[in-house]
Image (cartoon, rainbow, N blue to C red; front, side):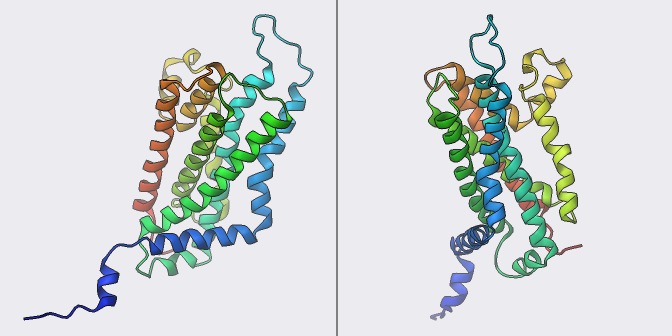
Length: 266
């Protein structure tokens, strides 16, 4: 006995990339039309790096450490600033989709949660790549930031760190009910990572319990990877390990975001 299969039913049952690509394309179109957000993504980190340059421009050199202060702090900030900006923008954008009802309508379609979050993650990750490239171009090309390693590694690490910020922003938005609540996650999720990532005090010099906390924070590994590039002319195993840890945090955050994403807006 022959059983006819409706082609439409078969296509609905077969996983495809179409929902994911459609979501990515939609978010990119929205970003392209939102000039203020584009400016914040591409311009703000570069401007803050410029401000940092003028802060340290006339700082006396330490005879015990010939590396200029701007080089030591600046290379870490190239990982921190994209992380902060992308976390904030992603959390607010996702919460805006939820409060406007767009998210609830999308989740009534065959679009899966993982397709939705992967689409958001991919779109904002492309923006993060542009952000990291612009910030590094300004820092190395115009501000004279120097490192022992190839600046291309700095761009890669900054981009992966920004992608991790995107993933954590998507995860944080799942626990917020308003855009204001999404912003309130900044001091909870981001600020401790800035304090404990090694920017202010080397992580090895932190009290043991604080060092243990810093070991479970992705920004710590991003800064460690950047420090490897700062002091080594070639890519090191430690750099690749730290980069893989940051990427792993991003994947876990996306999976947790998919698991906690509500189908209905409270």
